[in-house]
Image (cartoon, rainbow, N blue to C red; front, side, top):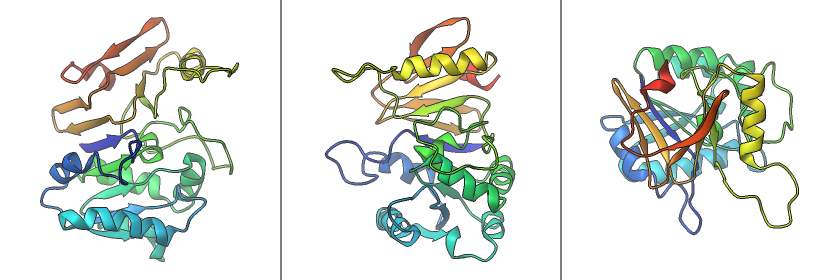
Length: 234
């Protein structure tokens, strides 16, 4: 399996997809074309999303082909050198992917060794379910099931703090609710500026911030870049 699962596309004050580009370039070494899934876009068009990603990946000589142009999007996935799923609204993304049979097509490609890259919602859908997304359910997908390339859940954009004056639940409290209802599942809080990379036996956290680990019956704790993450795959 070759996965690059990025928490967020853009750090505050930076250009789009600027901070992860060194890792993306290394991950896509030898790849000339990537198939892109833009369906998390809601307030802007799929064409605009494709162009935005092409502008950045074009810097490293990678052509972007979006599935939204195709009569048979799953066929394009099956023929892909690499697959990329962008961020946005996870419910909108899952609904469209399920309707077009892209979940199963992508899982088959991942299992055959095809590189998969995603950020935010695109990282969330690599999980067994979409249930640890931060997004509002603006549309109803067929189910909460996602690609299932990894056996644990990711919460992208993980935040520790509660805004001053806000009386609602913290992100940690929401995840604690999830693991209470799903006691056999690991959840990782992937902070902004960080990503997970899997390449064969190599599975690592990349970034300057630690990742928060959740599972029912275990006090939440932190892991850092360089720590052993193999427990998440069991």
